[in-house]
Image (cartoon, rainbow, N blue to C red):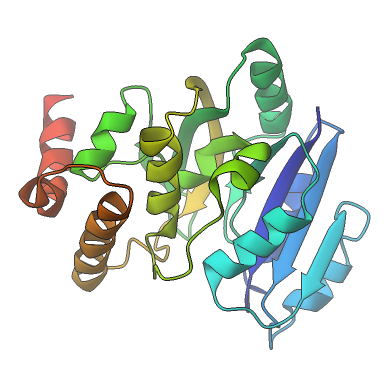
Length: 247
């Protein structure tokens, strides 16, 4: 089973080497690693070139943003399943892709959903994000599993489409809604912690970001003809806090 991993980056010299090292250290051998750079102006490309032995394909050219770059990576992919590893994240441990390959080999599914941890610049774990209790119905109230913890069959992108570029930070939410809710793909919770993410990503940067993603969640659900409560979407932060309190 070939696993395609896609990393997109732009001016990521401060973090991308750890990402590249994380892929190179994986014990699983049948990896296709694709790096899509958005024509970086710093030393990102020079760092990428140092890891040619573990990178299968890489390109550096202007793009229309994060999701356009992801689409380019998916278009280049030839693996059986596809995963995303952001340029400031790493795999949780060296056996992640071996565990993913085993899980997909043992289960007839279109996608697996796992867990992540989030850490700060000092490496301290600030959050553990488990998808153990997640179900697609929760998309209707603003909850999605962590994007980097989902591994998709590559054929799904041919069948149901790529990331939509008219979203600023919610194209992953729309794609997950389209796959899991609208088209009812088969999936299973893997229990695998796949990724260590650096806090402060594109969709977790304050109140304005919260407002924007709320609008884009509603837009994603509307586009896929999913009925939902706008109030519950806006109050999803409250439900998260309540859920943590109950735990």
